[in-house]
Length: 251
Image 1 (cartoon, rainbow, N blue to C red):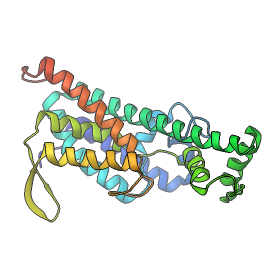
Image 2: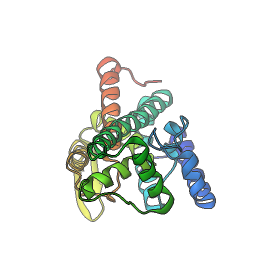
Image 3: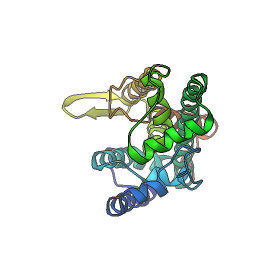
Protein backbone atom coordinates (compact mmCIF):
# COMPACT_ATOMS: atom_id res chain seq x y z
CA UNK A 1 0.00 0.00 0.00
CA UNK A 2 1.51 3.33 -1.05
CA UNK A 3 0.77 6.75 0.35
CA UNK A 4 -2.59 8.34 -0.29
CA UNK A 5 -2.55 10.91 -3.08
CA UNK A 6 -3.79 14.47 -2.62
CA UNK A 7 -7.00 14.38 -4.68
CA UNK A 8 -7.95 10.98 -3.35
CA UNK A 9 -7.54 12.29 0.19
CA UNK A 10 -9.90 15.21 -0.48
CA UNK A 11 -12.51 13.04 -2.24
CA UNK A 12 -12.36 10.51 0.58
CA UNK A 13 -12.86 13.21 3.22
CA UNK A 14 -15.81 14.73 1.34
CA UNK A 15 -17.43 11.30 1.03
CA UNK A 16 -17.04 10.66 4.75
CA UNK A 17 -18.47 14.09 5.61
CA UNK A 18 -21.46 13.49 3.33
CA UNK A 19 -22.00 10.08 4.90
CA UNK A 20 -21.89 11.41 8.46
CA UNK A 21 -24.21 14.26 7.50
CA UNK A 22 -26.68 11.91 5.80
CA UNK A 23 -26.78 9.69 8.88
CA UNK A 24 -27.47 12.68 11.12
CA UNK A 25 -30.03 14.36 8.84
CA UNK A 26 -31.77 11.21 7.61
CA UNK A 27 -34.12 10.91 4.63
CA UNK A 28 -34.04 14.61 3.81
CA UNK A 29 -30.36 14.34 2.89
CA UNK A 30 -31.15 11.58 0.40
CA UNK A 31 -34.08 13.56 -1.01
CA UNK A 32 -31.71 16.47 -1.67
CA UNK A 33 -28.48 14.80 -2.75
CA UNK A 34 -29.21 11.29 -4.07
CA UNK A 35 -29.86 11.03 -7.82
CA UNK A 36 -33.56 10.55 -8.45
CA UNK A 37 -35.28 9.53 -11.65
CA UNK A 38 -35.79 12.76 -13.66
CA UNK A 39 -39.60 12.41 -13.61
CA UNK A 40 -39.60 12.14 -9.81
CA UNK A 41 -40.42 15.36 -7.93
CA UNK A 42 -37.21 15.02 -5.87
CA UNK A 43 -34.95 15.25 -8.94
CA UNK A 44 -32.59 18.24 -9.11
CA UNK A 45 -29.73 18.90 -11.55
CA UNK A 46 -27.10 19.10 -8.80
CA UNK A 47 -27.82 15.47 -7.88
CA UNK A 48 -25.93 14.36 -10.99
CA UNK A 49 -22.80 15.39 -9.05
CA UNK A 50 -23.78 15.06 -5.39
CA UNK A 51 -24.95 11.44 -5.66
CA UNK A 52 -21.28 10.46 -6.08
CA UNK A 53 -20.69 11.46 -2.44
CA UNK A 54 -23.74 9.74 -0.96
CA UNK A 55 -23.80 6.13 0.24
CA UNK A 56 -26.47 3.73 1.40
CA UNK A 57 -24.72 2.29 4.43
CA UNK A 58 -21.44 1.72 6.24
CA UNK A 59 -20.37 -1.31 4.20
CA UNK A 60 -21.16 0.59 0.99
CA UNK A 61 -18.90 3.53 1.78
CA UNK A 62 -16.23 1.32 3.36
CA UNK A 63 -15.79 -0.79 0.22
CA UNK A 64 -15.87 2.21 -2.11
CA UNK A 65 -13.38 4.28 -0.10
CA UNK A 66 -11.01 1.33 0.25
CA UNK A 67 -11.07 0.80 -3.52
CA UNK A 68 -10.60 4.54 -4.07
CA UNK A 69 -7.60 4.58 -1.75
CA UNK A 70 -5.93 1.57 -3.40
CA UNK A 71 -6.61 2.24 -7.09
CA UNK A 72 -7.17 5.99 -7.04
CA UNK A 73 -3.88 6.82 -5.37
CA UNK A 74 -1.97 4.62 -7.80
CA UNK A 75 -3.70 6.19 -10.79
CA UNK A 76 -3.28 9.78 -9.62
CA UNK A 77 0.43 9.24 -8.93
CA UNK A 78 0.76 7.86 -12.47
CA UNK A 79 -1.19 10.36 -14.57
CA UNK A 80 -1.22 13.46 -12.37
CA UNK A 81 -3.90 15.31 -10.45
CA UNK A 82 -5.72 17.10 -13.29
CA UNK A 83 -6.18 14.05 -15.45
CA UNK A 84 -7.14 11.91 -12.50
CA UNK A 85 -9.89 14.33 -11.50
CA UNK A 86 -11.11 14.56 -15.10
CA UNK A 87 -11.27 10.76 -15.41
CA UNK A 88 -12.88 10.27 -11.99
CA UNK A 89 -15.73 12.72 -12.49
CA UNK A 90 -16.19 11.82 -16.17
CA UNK A 91 -16.63 8.18 -15.16
CA UNK A 92 -19.07 9.21 -12.44
CA UNK A 93 -21.12 11.26 -14.91
CA UNK A 94 -21.00 8.45 -17.46
CA UNK A 95 -22.23 6.04 -14.81
CA UNK A 96 -25.16 8.31 -13.97
CA UNK A 97 -25.98 8.80 -17.65
CA UNK A 98 -26.12 5.10 -18.49
CA UNK A 99 -28.13 4.28 -15.36
CA UNK A 100 -30.66 7.01 -16.16
CA UNK A 101 -30.98 5.72 -19.74
CA UNK A 102 -31.66 2.22 -18.42
CA UNK A 103 -34.16 3.61 -15.91
CA UNK A 104 -35.97 5.46 -18.72
CA UNK A 105 -36.14 2.27 -20.79
CA UNK A 106 -37.43 0.30 -17.81
CA UNK A 107 -39.92 3.02 -16.84
CA UNK A 108 -41.24 3.55 -20.38
CA UNK A 109 -41.79 -0.14 -21.09
CA UNK A 110 -43.71 -0.59 -17.81
CA UNK A 111 -45.60 2.68 -18.36
CA UNK A 112 -46.71 1.42 -21.78
CA UNK A 113 -47.99 -1.79 -20.17
CA UNK A 114 -50.14 0.29 -17.81
CA UNK A 115 -51.50 2.30 -20.74
CA UNK A 116 -52.30 -0.92 -22.59
CA UNK A 117 -54.23 -2.04 -19.50
CA UNK A 118 -56.44 1.07 -19.89
CA UNK A 119 -54.77 3.17 -17.20
CA UNK A 120 -54.54 6.84 -18.14
CA UNK A 121 -51.50 9.01 -17.23
CA UNK A 122 -53.29 10.57 -14.24
CA UNK A 123 -54.12 7.12 -12.81
CA UNK A 124 -50.54 5.95 -13.28
CA UNK A 125 -49.25 9.00 -11.43
CA UNK A 126 -51.79 8.39 -8.64
CA UNK A 127 -50.51 4.81 -8.42
CA UNK A 128 -46.92 6.01 -8.04
CA UNK A 129 -47.87 8.73 -5.57
CA UNK A 130 -49.72 6.15 -3.49
CA UNK A 131 -46.66 3.89 -3.43
CA UNK A 132 -44.49 6.78 -2.24
CA UNK A 133 -47.03 7.91 0.37
CA UNK A 134 -48.15 4.56 1.81
CA UNK A 135 -45.60 2.02 0.60
CA UNK A 136 -48.47 -0.03 -0.83
CA UNK A 137 -49.04 -0.80 -4.51
CA UNK A 138 -52.70 -1.07 -5.54
CA UNK A 139 -53.36 -2.08 -9.16
CA UNK A 140 -55.25 -4.60 -11.28
CA UNK A 141 -53.03 -7.67 -11.02
CA UNK A 142 -55.15 -9.51 -13.60
CA UNK A 143 -54.13 -7.02 -16.28
CA UNK A 144 -50.66 -6.03 -15.08
CA UNK A 145 -48.05 -8.59 -13.97
CA UNK A 146 -46.42 -7.98 -10.61
CA UNK A 147 -43.00 -7.78 -12.28
CA UNK A 148 -44.21 -4.94 -14.52
CA UNK A 149 -45.66 -2.97 -11.62
CA UNK A 150 -42.45 -3.43 -9.63
CA UNK A 151 -40.41 -2.37 -12.66
CA UNK A 152 -42.32 0.92 -12.85
CA UNK A 153 -41.97 1.48 -9.10
CA UNK A 154 -38.26 0.71 -9.00
CA UNK A 155 -37.45 3.06 -11.86
CA UNK A 156 -39.47 5.92 -10.39
CA UNK A 157 -38.82 5.75 -6.64
CA UNK A 158 -35.33 4.24 -6.24
CA UNK A 159 -32.57 6.88 -6.02
CA UNK A 160 -28.98 6.27 -7.08
CA UNK A 161 -26.17 6.83 -4.58
CA UNK A 162 -22.48 6.04 -4.38
CA UNK A 163 -19.07 6.61 -5.88
CA UNK A 164 -19.00 3.14 -7.45
CA UNK A 165 -19.36 4.35 -11.04
CA UNK A 166 -16.44 6.76 -10.72
CA UNK A 167 -14.35 4.12 -8.95
CA UNK A 168 -15.11 1.55 -11.65
CA UNK A 169 -13.70 4.06 -14.13
CA UNK A 170 -10.54 4.34 -12.04
CA UNK A 171 -10.23 0.56 -11.79
CA UNK A 172 -10.67 0.14 -15.54
CA UNK A 173 -7.94 2.72 -16.15
CA UNK A 174 -5.58 0.94 -13.75
CA UNK A 175 -6.23 -2.39 -15.48
CA UNK A 176 -5.36 -0.78 -18.81
CA UNK A 177 -2.05 0.81 -17.80
CA UNK A 178 -1.00 -1.84 -15.26
CA UNK A 179 -2.53 -5.02 -16.72
CA UNK A 180 -0.07 -7.35 -15.00
CA UNK A 181 -0.18 -5.68 -11.59
CA UNK A 182 -0.58 -8.48 -9.00
CA UNK A 183 -3.69 -8.08 -6.85
CA UNK A 184 -4.91 -10.16 -3.94
CA UNK A 185 -8.43 -11.08 -2.84
CA UNK A 186 -9.11 -11.63 0.85
CA UNK A 187 -8.58 -15.26 1.90
CA UNK A 188 -7.02 -16.14 -1.48
CA UNK A 189 -3.20 -16.09 -1.11
CA UNK A 190 -2.58 -16.27 -4.86
CA UNK A 191 -1.94 -13.03 -6.79
CA UNK A 192 -4.24 -12.33 -9.72
CA UNK A 193 -3.25 -9.95 -12.50
CA UNK A 194 -5.24 -6.72 -12.60
CA UNK A 195 -6.49 -7.35 -16.13
CA UNK A 196 -8.06 -10.64 -15.01
CA UNK A 197 -9.39 -9.58 -11.62
CA UNK A 198 -10.82 -6.22 -12.68
CA UNK A 199 -11.91 -7.58 -16.06
CA UNK A 200 -13.67 -10.49 -14.38
CA UNK A 201 -15.39 -8.16 -11.93
CA UNK A 202 -16.58 -6.06 -14.87
CA UNK A 203 -18.00 -9.13 -16.63
CA UNK A 204 -19.86 -10.21 -13.49
CA UNK A 205 -21.45 -6.77 -13.31
CA UNK A 206 -22.29 -6.88 -17.02
CA UNK A 207 -23.95 -10.27 -16.54
CA UNK A 208 -25.99 -8.95 -13.62
CA UNK A 209 -26.95 -5.81 -15.56
CA UNK A 210 -28.23 -7.83 -18.52
CA UNK A 211 -29.92 -10.68 -16.65
CA UNK A 212 -30.99 -8.97 -13.42
CA UNK A 213 -29.37 -11.80 -11.44
CA UNK A 214 -27.39 -10.61 -8.41
CA UNK A 215 -24.03 -12.31 -7.92
CA UNK A 216 -22.13 -9.70 -5.94
CA UNK A 217 -23.63 -6.98 -3.75
CA UNK A 218 -27.26 -6.23 -2.83
CA UNK A 219 -30.13 -6.75 -5.25
CA UNK A 220 -30.66 -3.01 -5.77
CA UNK A 221 -27.11 -2.44 -7.06
CA UNK A 222 -26.99 -0.03 -10.02
CA UNK A 223 -25.08 -2.37 -12.33
CA UNK A 224 -25.50 -0.19 -15.40
CA UNK A 225 -23.82 2.63 -13.50
CA UNK A 226 -20.82 0.36 -12.89
CA UNK A 227 -20.72 -0.50 -16.59
CA UNK A 228 -21.00 3.15 -17.64
CA UNK A 229 -18.21 4.25 -15.30
CA UNK A 230 -15.90 1.46 -16.39
CA UNK A 231 -16.45 2.14 -20.10
CA UNK A 232 -15.76 5.89 -19.73
CA UNK A 233 -12.68 5.26 -17.61
CA UNK A 234 -11.33 2.68 -20.06
CA UNK A 235 -11.93 4.82 -23.17
CA UNK A 236 -10.43 7.92 -21.55
CA UNK A 237 -7.35 6.03 -20.40
CA UNK A 238 -6.99 4.25 -23.73
CA UNK A 239 -7.00 7.60 -25.55
CA UNK A 240 -4.39 9.10 -23.21
CA UNK A 241 -2.21 6.02 -23.35
CA UNK A 242 -2.40 5.87 -27.12
CA UNK A 243 -1.39 9.51 -27.52
CA UNK A 244 0.81 10.39 -24.56
CA UNK A 245 1.99 7.31 -22.68
CA UNK A 246 5.60 7.94 -23.63
CA UNK A 247 5.71 11.05 -21.47
CA UNK A 248 7.17 10.59 -18.02
CA UNK A 249 4.21 12.14 -16.23
CA UNK A 250 0.82 13.44 -17.32
CA UNK A 251 0.03 16.72 -15.60
